[in-house]
Amino acid sequence: MKNKFFYTLFLTGIVFIQVSAQAPRRGTAYYEEMVGRLSNQMRLLQDENAALAGTVHALQQEVRQLKQMMQAYREETTQLRRMISEESVARQKQMGGIADKIQRAADAQAKADAEARAAEAARAAQAQAPVISGEEYDYYVVESGDTLSAVSRAAGVSVARLKKVNGLKSDMLRVGQKLKIPRK
Image (cartoon, rainbow, N blue to C red; front, side, top):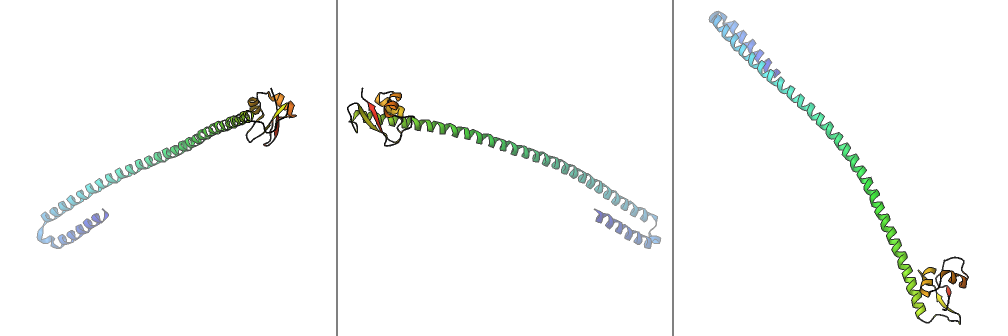
């Protein structure tokens, strides 16, 4: 844009020099024609300059809008990241709760299975000939997973009576321990 202006100004100077050199021959009509052409060229350059200034202004405005949009996107992205993080923490807590419930259910099932095995073992031991037999008692050898309550249910004897007969102070049993089972 500036180059065009200087080029036009340069051409105007050359035309003026040429006109000055030919002035005596051509007269004022020639000068007026040249001034008119230069005025037209100046008006065209001014119009083009105004159009370019308008375009620059519009582009600057568009850049401002784009910057505002970018800021809004950054804020939205930050908010989304925070929400995702919070959601992740909540899901982890939820999954931990579910895992705890599953573990408790598995523990309860394992305990129930152990008691069922102990009861079954006690019934099987009672149905078969006892390992060692005496006149007043049958004997039962404790196996892995047996509990005193399961043995008492299988033998049909109370836990208190089993503890008294066997001299037990607690409900704890050891694998291989021989228990006296009173006969009915």
